[in-house]
Image 1: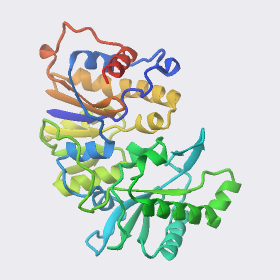
Image 2: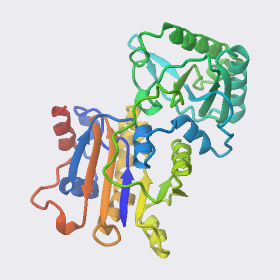
Image 3: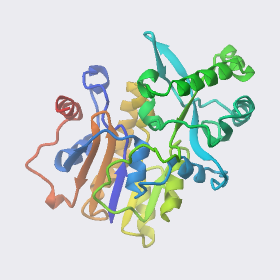
Amino acid sequence: MHLTLLVPELLWPEPTDAHTLAHLSCPALEGFLGRARLTRSPKTALESCLAACLGVHDAPLSVCRLQGEAAPISPAAAGFWHCADPVHLLFHQQRLLMGDTGLHDLTLPEAEALTADLTAHFPELGRFYAPAPQRWYLEATPTARLPPLPPLSAALGRELGSLLPEQRPEFVQTLNALQIQLHAHPINQRREQNGQTPVNGLWFWGGNRPEAAPPAPAPDFSPPRIAWGEATSPFTPLLAGLCQQQGISFQPLPQNGADWLRSLFDTPAPQSQFVLLDDLCPPALLQDGETWKTRLAQLDQTWFLPLVTALGHKISTLNLLSPTAYGLLHWRGATPHRWQFWKRPLALPALIRQLATQE
């Protein structure tokens, strides 16, 4: 069985952060990375990498994610669909940054009220739609020409000005107007009074305009027959929608690798499988080193150890991909007798520093 494992932000983005990189405990992962073959490609957003792994190269990600929502609506209606996700913009050292987009306590009634208000005040843009509290969409009018922006995971934590097109001042004015409207809404006023994070911006990406962003590099392996993702992951609707696009079976992911292997081999299964583990993505993008380190240690025990142990038995080939600050990294490991045993496993902090110096 061939397994593709997509683990975004596997490597901590700050190579000089001694506090986060000290005392990392991930022996199973380090053993695999040290003996597998590494291929390094340019930086790629998680959303683009996910589409490439499933063989989707030209479909708009906004429509794919919309189709994967728990309560989807038909994207075949007139107009142009964009992801219009709610974000929190914050000032840091006189810069406006894309802050925590999680807004985990935002409720669906709040999201529906905010999107209805935006639709009423900005009819020239189109209709805003919120099937989930943290995932919004815009069914744009033909005259609402929104520029292609990077996917949300590639924008989080970066300075807002560096992400916006310089030749589109009217779009920047639109974003400012949306921010003003959101700031003045009673829901956001109440959230601020209650000490909750307000929704003070939108991020448009994944649109189905012809000028969509270029796709990620195509991996050198075939798309899977079955894809697995965590039910509560914010990336699961996109994964599910991409699976629908390609006719790939989507399955909810078990809690650990041992259970996954056990369920897989209880019945005959296709020889090509894909698993998305995105636990490291939020803390890495938000510079939460302690949470990232804790989750990495958990993944090492619950997923990397059983999968590496099964390599050469239940798993014949393991492709481990990770979009990171150091590029799109692809480790390929086959049966253990073909591993590069003359290479000693490199500690993860040393590997991070090595990749940082090679940029």
